[in-house]
Image (tube, rainbow, N blue to C red; front, side, top):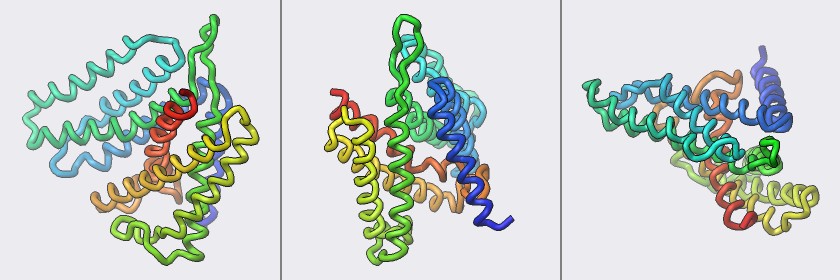
Amino acid sequence: MNNFIKRTLTGIIFVGVLLGGIFYNVYSFAALFCIITGLALWEFYGLLKHYENATLHRIISTLGGMYLFFACFLKASGLADSLTFLPYILFLMYIFIHELYTKAANPINNWAFTLLAQIYCAGSFSLLNFIAVHPGNSTNMPLYTPLFILAIFVFVWLNDTGAFLVGSAFGKRKLFERISPKKSWEGFWGGLVIVLIASQGFAWYAPEINRLHWLGLAVAIVLFATWGDLTESLLKRTLGVKDSGNILPGHGGILDRFDSVLMASPAAYCYLEFFIRN
C-alpha cells in the first residue's frame, strides 16, 4: 500500500477513535486513555529494556502506570478518596525493594528508567482526569467537560500542521538544530499564530471563559507541546531509533503521536488551575 494512503487511513482512524472516546461519555474517555497510558508505557519500557544494562519489569510497571491513571480518574470524579492511591504507593515501594533480591548489574538504572516512564507517561496522561472530570451530584455520576481536552488536541494538531506548512515554505532559522534539524523559528511562529486564531473559536463557543485566557492557554500549550516534541526527539536520538514503535502504520508509535501532549497536558492543567479556575 502506498505510504501516503497508509498514513492517511491510519490518521483518520486514529482521530476518529480519539474523538469518539473523548466525546461519547466520561467512561469511554477513561477507558481510552487508560489503554493509551498502558500502550505508551509498554512502548517506553520496550525502548529502554536493554539500554545501559537496564532490566525492567515491563508488565508490572505498565500495569502500575495504568492503575495510576485509574486511581486519578476515581479521585477526580469523587468516586473514591485518597486511599485509592495506596496500591500505587505499594507498587513504587516494590520497585525499590525488588532490586535487593535480583542482583542486577545496575539497579540505579532500573529504578531511574522505571520511575522516568511513570512520570513521563502515566503522570502526564493521569492529569487529563483533573482537567476534564469532576465529582458529580448525589447520583455519583461524575461530571465530565471534554472542552479543554479537545482544546489540547486541536491546538497541538493545528500547531504541528501550521509549523510544518510555514516551516516548509519559509523556514530558514533553525529552532533546535541539535535535536530536530528540520524545525525552524518561522515554523514555530506560524504554528503559534494559527493556534492563537483557533483559540478565539473556542472563546466564541465558550464565552464564559475570557478571550485572553484562551490566548494564554493556547500559548502555554504551543510552547510546551514544542518542548514535548523535542524531548521525544532527544529520547529517540539517544536510543538511536527513528520511531518509538510501529503500532500506527505510517505514523510510528504511541509516543510519536502523543509526544507533544505529554508536555502540553501538564502545562494546560497548571494554566487552568492558576488562571482560569482560581
